[in-house]
Every structure is written in structure tokens, then in C-alpha cells.
Picture 1 (cartoon, rainbow, N blue to C red):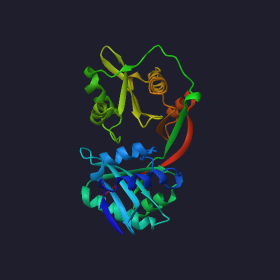
Picture 2 (cartoon, helix red, strand yellow; picture 1 turned 30 degrees about the vertical axis):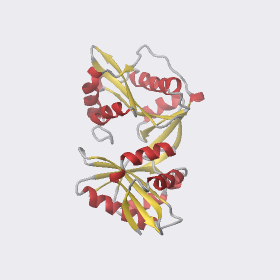
Picture 3 (cartoon, rainbow, N blue to C red; picture 1 turned 180 degrees about the vertical axis):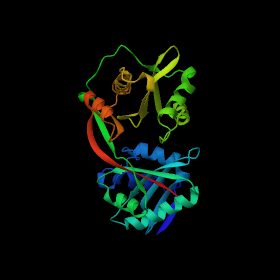
Picture 4 (cartoon, helix red, strand yellow; picture 1 turned 30 degrees about the horizontal axis):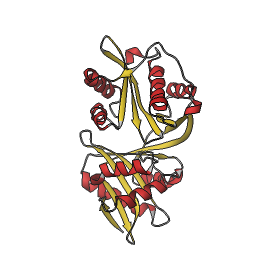
Length: 286
């Protein structure tokens, strides 16, 4: 068994493996896209922080790490073909390579369907901390319960960039993506941000992530603490759905929510979302 950093000459094989494994909840990762083209894009952008497990000249496992060095966090997608190799051996070998590469102080985050017992048992075995489970919700276009609102969000203006970023970091200080990351992704065209403002103050915002030709994700919805319970979150959510379904011609939009956030779950279900599955959440800091 050999562990190699992902390279251009093996990225196609690694993506094909990830694509196949991610079709089944029992072997998938919440951090991995479902479309092959999107997986290739993610791997291409993160080759230096992704690792392949090689056995008998074939890739049997992939650990792709999405690293934020400014916050010392790494969101990890762990995908292993248990038919071809021992899960724990491959997982530990790739994870050790990642730890040696990134050094001390890095926090590793794992999100994966609860059906993926092999990943859960591996993380329990190395002493990772179990966090609050998350729900993955999905909305198909024909199930959308469109709501009207007197507050119409608008696309984030350049003059609002820093205000939105500061609001995001204040609401979600431990999120896997920072306000600066969101702004950087606007230039790449992978995300769109919409806001509700009053007298040039950002009251609420939503981040729409483009996942492929048919999929989009309501990645983040945030509302200022002093502006909550006024319908801003619902207005942002409805606008993200409208953009996804009408402008981007997406067939479905998904989102992730903490399992204990009952108010948000109620809003999403009322909009037409359904709970697809539950994700286990783990964190490991060396």
C-alpha cells in the first residue's frame, strides 16, 4: 500500500473512484460532490492537499482536504473502496500523510451520512470528537412552496463586501468557510451572495453555491441578531430558490442544517424541503 499526493496523471482515476463511492450513503462523504465534473474540479483545485491510497497499481482510497490555513481547519472527504482494501489501514495511512503534511494545530472536520459506519468507527477509534449531527435537506423544483415577501433581496454590491464578510464571521465564527473565502469565490463564479439592507446596513444575507448544471446549494443564510424574527431569513431562502430554479435552471437545491436547529428546520420544511438523510459530524485536532 502506497500513499501519494494527488497528481494530474491520477486525478481522473481518483475522481472516478470518488464518484462511484459517493453514490451510496454507506461509503460517501458530505464534502464530496455528486457530479463527476464537479469532483474533477474540486480535485484539480486541491491536488496538493489530497492523498491517494494505491494498492496493486490502482487507487483504492482518496482523502481530499479542503484547507483553510488562516484558521487551521481542514474539511475532509474520506472515500475508500472496502472491497479492494482494509478501510482502517487505508484511512489511517492517508490521514497520517495529511497530518504530516499540515503539521500540528490543524483541526480536521468530517461530515458523512450516518449509514457510513466504517468512517464513524475509524474516527471513534482514533479519538475524534463527535459533534452535533446535521440534516441534509433537498428541495425539488416542483415541491417549492414559494412565499411572497415585502423585502426583496438584491445581489451583493461591492460596497457591501466587507460588511457582509464581517457579519458572516460574527454569526458563524467556526464555519468551514470564512467571509473572505466567500468573497474570493465570487470572482471564481462558484458562489453568489444576496443581501437585505437598510440604510446601507446588511441585515441578512444568503450564499448560493453552484454545484453543477442541475444542482445548487443554499450554503449559508445569516441574519443579524437584532433583525431576527422579522421574516428576513425566509425572504433570503425564497430568493435563493428563485434564482436557482428560474435563472440557473437547477432541478434541485439542497442545504445542511444542525440537527438541533428546530426553527430553521421548520422553515425549510414549510418551504418544501424534505430531509434526505442525517450526517454524522466529527472533529479531530492533533
